[in-house]
Image 1: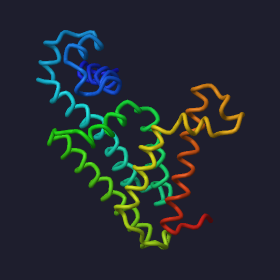
Image 2: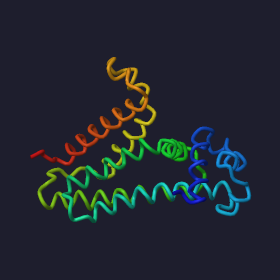
Image 3: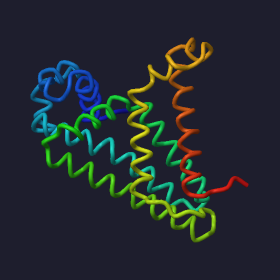
Image 4: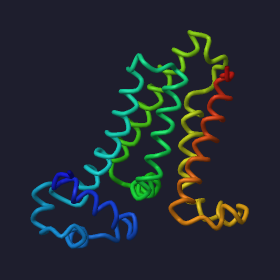
Length: 210
């Protein structure tokens, strides 16, 4: 069950994704979350601090999952990459509002704390990828030595573009796919996105299916 802070963050996320950060007031967030403005002030202090808390909350959970998978000895390097990638794609699917906010903030944000958070989390993801890929290279699982920064850029860039490209993909697809219900199409779309990214990443790493 969500805590009171998480309840407020969830509703703030919804309304900011729709109206934009500058177009959303603390009063709007309070009305959406059905809480008093004083409660938002109590938990967060200001709209800016609430936004910082939202980024930290969402990004902490993603990096925590990746760290746990990396440290789990029961999975091979290939399985770890697939699990981390699947979780990333699934997060984008389920947390579309947050990733839309993130896209916007990367372009317009003047908040140094949020900008630093984004930079630090990117670096941590790249470092996790580095540890995982180097382990696979040492074992002869991965034959290639691609640029880690551009691997991360390829994955995140494709995912972010995919958020905005769902309707275009549906318009481009054959009749069988285009006639799927919204929920079934969403599942189909992100499952195929995962398959594409998994194939791309394995190819870049020089992994050969056994």
